[in-house]
Image 1 (tube, rainbow, N blue to C red):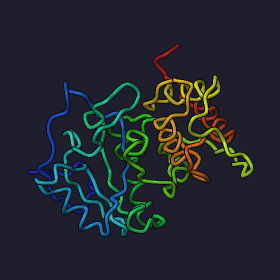
Image 2: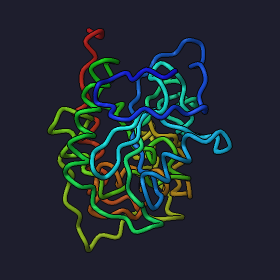
Image 3: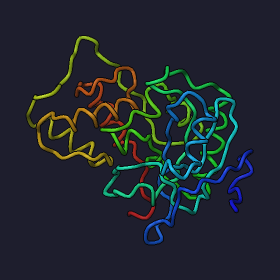
Image 4: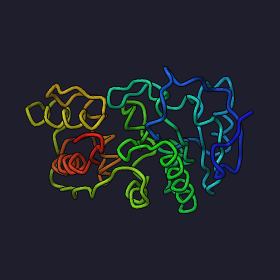
Length: 256
């Protein structure tokens, strides 16, 4: 029987799709998704069916109702093939929250205030319980940029940061006259940007060439940290925002 980990969970609907965390790993990532289906009820139904082979710890509908499906100490199956900062088993090191939104396929809409207030409350609880660092509050698209776009460019990461959730800096304004470095462009600047993205945690190799993986990763970065224009091209706004973000990383108290 599933006992809720928080009194914020108004509904408990157990999913059979979970297991033990690998090698006793503990949650160090909070991963945010959107449901990407027409209704929250449809998403929760699918996440709790054995045949789906997917699950999440929590779902939050558009009215802010929180449903828990998997215990936080268990490994839910929400991230899929993914990578962050050297870790490829993201499910073993994360807690996943599905935030209902039809998404890009079904009519992507703004996230309502009542829903975001519930997201903020739940995230703050989870971060506090597990001591999750700000820079490890991530989008599904951050850890799986080739496959995923969620929770997308309409998700208000800046608002969450003001509430004490996640890592955020002011994005550099986009210069509409600058197209940026797109597919096929090569050079030392491309390699430098790739190295900086990798140092932040993204799965990218410093090849010096804007290849398909680079475009996916840059678009994921833009979607999270510079949502004014999501095109996968390396422009000065993207570079400056990335530099600003790395410079603002919290200092590790264990490092002198």
